[in-house]
Every structure is written in C-alpha cells, then in structure tokens.
Amino acid sequence: MPARTGKEYLERLDASRPTVHIQGESLTGGIQEHPAFRNVVRTYAELYDLQHTDEHRDTMTYTSPSSGDRVATSFLVPKTPEDLVKRRSAFKVWADYSNGMLGRTGDYMNSSLMALASAADWFGQSDPAFGENIRRYYEKVREQDLLCTHTLIPPQTNRAVSGAEQAGGKLAARIVKEDDNGVVIRGARMLATIAPFADEMLVFPSSVLRNTPEDKQFSYAFAIANDTPGLRYIAREPLDYDRPRHDHPLASRFEESDCVVVFDDVHVPYERCFVLGEPELCNGFYSQTSAVVHMTHQVVTRTSAKTEYILGLVSLLTEAIGIEGFQHVQEDVAEVITTLETLRAFLRAAEADATFNEYGVLTPAFAPLNAARNLYPKLYQRFPQILRKLGASGLMATPTELDINGPAAADIEMYLQAATLTGAERVKLFRLVWDTCISAFASRQALYEYYFFGDPVRMAGAYVKSYDREPYKARVQAFLERP
Image (cartoon, rainbow, N blue to C red; front, side, top):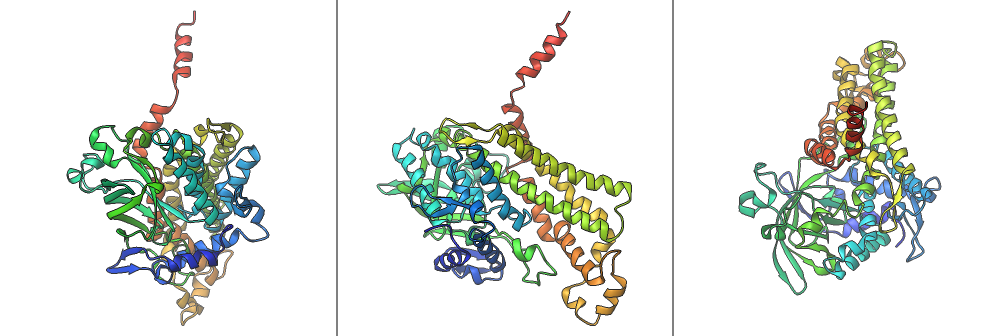
C-alpha cells in the first residue's frame, strides 16, 4: 500500500477495536464517531490527504526502495543534504496545518523508526533476530503508512523511588513471563498521546536503568497493535467539548488525547521485540542509534511552525486593537520574533553541519537541536503570557457564535468592534487568542511543551554532563598562565 489517504486511515481505524475507558464509558471500537475523538480523527485524516495533493505530493512522498510505491517522506533515510531538506519540508507541511499544535503526528515516530532500523546491527548485539525485527517492522510501518504512538514512563506514584521500585515493582509495566513465542507484559505505562486512534503502540525505554538483575524485567522495546488483547487505555477528560469551531477553534480540531496504558498480561510475539532483558541497550536506545537526533529534527520543525503561528496571531491582535505603536508591546512582539529566528538558526545549523553516523545515515548536528529542545520548553511559556497581557480584559469579552447570529448581534457589532475589524471579526479573532492562551486546551499545550522531552531540570543536568567544556576550560586556564 502506498502513502495512505484520509479515507484509508479512517477505514483501518473503523476495523480496529482498541479498549478505551473515557468518562465512565468503555469503548471497544467506534473511536472515529465518539465525541471525544471524532474531530481530531478528522484532522488526522486531512493530514493524510495532504500527501496526495498536487501542491505537496512531491515533498511529502518518495519512491519506496522495496515496493516502488510512493511512501511518506518521514521514512526516507537521508543520504544527501537535499534529503534532509526534503524531510524538514515534509514535516513543515503537517506542522503548518495544525499550527504546530499536534505533537504526535506520524512523522515524529516515523523519524525514530527510520533511525532505529538503519541501526539494526546495533540491536543485533544481543540477538541478530532483534536487528531483523526492527528492520522488518520499519518496512511494515513504511509500506502501510501506519500511525504509531509510544509510551515511555512508569506510573507517577512515588517520585522518591525509581519506576522499578513503585509499589514493590508491581505497578510499572514489566516482563512477567517468557515462552517459546514471546513475552507477557503486566503493569502500566504513561503517557500515550493519540493512543485511541493510532494503529500501533511502540513501547520504548525512557528512564535510565541501572543494569541490576531487578532491572531486567523492565528492560525491553517492542511494538504491538493498538487493539492487542489485554491492552487498554485510560483517557483523560477530553478538552474538545464538541462545540462549534468558531468558539473553540483549536480544541475542536487538534485535541490529542493522552492516556495511561494498562498491560493486562499482554502477549508480545518475539518478532515484535527489539530489545529484551538488556538494560545497557535500553539506556543507549536513542543516543547510540541517532534516533533522538532525527526525532528532534522533526520537533524543532514543528515548534518553528508553532512560533510562526504565535507571531501571526500576536500581530493580528496588536493591529486589531491599535496597540502596535506602544514600545512595551513592540518589546513583546520582538521576543516572539527572536524565538522564531533562533529556532530557524538551530535548524539551519543542524542541517549545514550534518555528518554520516556509523550506519551511513546523514544525521543533523545534535548540538543546535539539543540547545533548541532545552530552550523551547521555557520559551513557549512566555507566549500565553504575552497574549494574555496584550488581549487583557478583551479576552473576557468573547461571546459565542450563537450570540453573533442571535439577538445580541447588533450590540456585538457596535460595542465589540476593533480598530480594524467588525464586531463579529473581532470576536472570532479573540476566540482564537483565548483558545491559545487561556482555555483548557491552551493550558494542556503549555504543559505538553514544558515536559515534551522530560523534566527540564533533569534534561538540563544531562545537557551539562554531555557537553564537552574541556576546550573552553583549557582556553581560560591558558589565559591565566599567560606571561
């Protein structure tokens, strides 16, 4: 099958039977029709359709080396600088469509799988079969254009101890049995975004393991179908309230569900396993395969698109109510511009300084991407603050679409007009600002960006440890010793 259309995505989802608990309901299928999911599912279908438009087909697809079909560019193994640009351009199409609000579009995990499969020999250190497994799985996802999500961390019960120690080791998903055909997984994981409407679940390492005998049961990497027996999801309250798009312009399109994943003795066949019982391999899963670099390439492309959206929104807001001329407003606008140009510079530097890794994959330089992923979680928190300050009390004067078309229409037109907009136009713009900086959807976006790659404090610690500062220490020491 070539790159999917939206119709093909929906047909496969219709045939799937994932178990999802949400707001007191237990669903086993019918996801695409449920009020909590139907709008975002429709958006994902629209993303797949973009692959087939005349405008984007050449950017978003390439010829599969195995089938000869057109498959998604996010699976492309980069060998030339042009390949890296093509990949980034494809990422950008989807990111622009959602204003960067969708954090788990398929290209994110596709980038990971591309890097992991290219490093199949690394997986073969433990067992040659695991190397073949990751290579075959990547090809399966590529040729069927499957939508993958992933789950990484143990339940958040007692942060003072490791995941393996939570409730005596009985909470975190772990291997409880091994047989001739695979392993059995029992326990829970967090936090699977888009799980109810994805095709596949990637269960990958996250927390650093200590390579003790106790850690072996928590040392694994595998993939399973989303409706595998024994697998169930506990979804949080939906932030799409099934209201008109006018009133909730972002939440009604881009509300990705986040779920706790429960493994109730889920059997995982060996052919779907990539690492088993090897803590050290789990610890090197992302860094030794370059997966983290290619995933971050996609993420920084998305956050660049998100920052472009914020800049456009801020600019429309300041023009609409005539505050562009105030210097403190210009200072806030300049902050958004600076963030955007910083992200663009990181991307350009990463691609310009790309080198081949040991598996023959042209890999962006990680230093600028790593800087971006450490900076953006904090930089994004300023954007809702800026929008709230600039919108001020006007963000409370946001009647609904029914009001605009109802008995209050004349009053809205008279009293809610802006310097450059009619009353109805101003309300529509301010509803978008509200859904970007104040609503429940906006708060989830801020939290999501802050913890996207993990706890920023721990990330900073890892960043400091990994950065080679010896040349700079040596320079200062030489200066101190200069006659």
